[in-house]
Length: 521
Image (cartoon, rainbow, N blue to C red):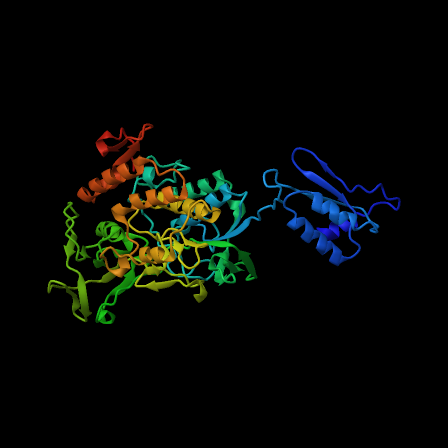
């Protein structure tokens, strides 16, 4: 600033020297003679910074500098309330890792506060959408990296689009059914991106290789971060410094493969659902699907349309809803040998293919150990409210909770994180945050981030702490109605629709009531 001001020297005939301060209602201008040396400039700057009550101190200092030869015009803003010098707050630089649904929700919230934040997002794919980008390949992508998406060809969502939509953009297009295709969800995310003009913040085909915290001296809350990224098209690397980071790299890409004694002797094909694409590949086979969560049930139903027999292996309560005649529920697999698969109840079955539908593990290969983050049987620690790094609260992990209505929860988490960085939300003591991070509610460690019905109180707590409105009640009411119906009708629930009326009431509409909406589907 000083160099630029000194470069604008006045003509040789200096105008009269003004040592008074000319005021108007909003600010005060200082017309001063400049110091003769750089050290004097520094002294001037210190004087101005320390002036807090009146301009008299400045004028006294000026009176001692009558031998100065150049005229310098400086503009100093004074607070009308405190008479102190107002300093412009520097924008916080924020990096977002990933531009799937969690990343887009985060980018949008930071963009809404662009007066306080400059945000940049890094996405390894050539388009936004993350998980919802379907690829026929199960091995490597266009950049010779392992395929990130676990999307399969005929997937329709197990939640209605009326509940999946972000609260600030509810416009799903192109599919009248409530349970929509992955193409429809991807189109929705692209429309969301364009509606809010988010592409300007996103660097596509860019891999984040390392995130290193740079700890502030004596105050960990002043942590900055070095983000090392790589352009996957040119292999050029770059380093970005930021004040806060939102980790949004998803959690449906690294398969969880529980150890089964002797499984290496299984004579058939072994695979994880991450590599499943279409049911035709299992025509006339006997298939064992291990795991009866959402994907396990969904994939079993699909494969049963083409396979000879599908054994759905799990130790949960039996699904009471009617199933296909060739879809058989059996106990969990406990071991394997060359003869077949041994079950928890002593049974033995043989199969052509064994499919692990056993979920995924969280993975953050780019995080430096200085982040303090550890994974303990898929429990990410230490995170306050499944979100904020206790030791570096300017680092958040958006989208960890499971068994939730995802997009609205991402929205709430992102808004809370922005509120926290703006100082609106306040954190409790470190002891209380650690207690929250370690709370398991009597469940095994690997279920630490499962919320289920607790998601609604969780969302409300974050909204209250962040001083923003709660989610509309139709999310909770609609989910409860939908979940109850899905449990009773596993085979046919995706044919029904959910309608949210203008007054917030929720209605479940069955196929016979859909007035032809499902014709040809």
